[in-house]
Image (tube, rainbow, N blue to C red):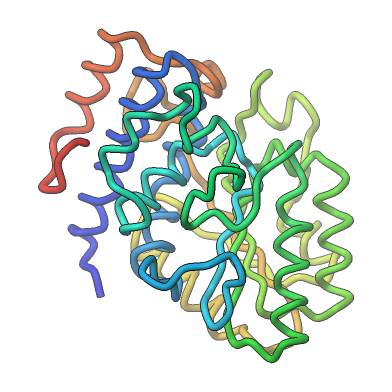
Length: 282
């Protein structure tokens, strides 16, 4: 079990990786990657049953993670590298021509840890529900985790998958929403408006947990509650309140950094604000 200090060091290093990857590539999506870094760090290092040494796309006997909000691939790649799926220095190849680390997760080059490529926003929850149903049919005890964005949750396919998962009683499915209230064109409420997201998921037949996505005690409690609900007949949605661009003051709380690469000077400033960690940069 990791301490909160250890988890904080890891998530800070993940944010350093994100900023450097996007800055060096000159493109990418740092905002949502940074807002989701804390709860995904807990998921990969503490909660999820997975093993890089024996990984394969069948996920038999293990948990699986699907990134529905595929543009936040920097956080996904950093966590895969930091948990041992591929060498950490490979992060420097993010978005390079021919790299395994494409802008959205892909399986065409066999990147370990990636079960499902991401397509248009909204598709990942459907894929996760399908994997969860497959595990149910096979008697596989593994769970399926999926991260959605709140802007992405304006997509109709999210709610179609929500109906499917509840109908089939996929209580081995744990979805997470990075609820940072920002999307590419502005705040989520000003663009599409999700209204009462907690009430909506409950109305769709899901168990719903709401938590602070930057507080490791709250994150730990949320996943513990989700674990208690495993096998109780309903899928689980954890709504994590987060801050877009968390950890860097000029990126924080604004849609401006949804899909914008920091300059070299901005990267240096961001790294100074984040501070160094014992893990070290790639």
